[in-house]
Length: 102
Image 1: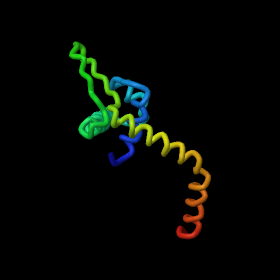
Image 2: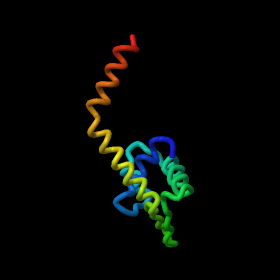
Image 3: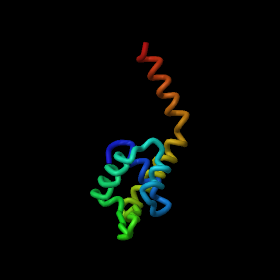
């Protein structure tokens, strides 16, 4: 769960199931390799479910598990907190930089 990519993939899946290419479009800056690794790790931790429809060409969708959905709700709360405290966080960084950086 460490790193920025899971924290971006989980909210992208919150509205509902997505295919790989749609996730690539929604998660700006992620590569195919990193997306695949992230989805695999999220699935391993029980946060994302992978559904292979068994068709040719392949049709695979990813969606949040109930556990992943509960984490998504927590991330939304964290995001709202960050938005509410944006000015205080910015001011703290400026104060720190002024005191400790040349």
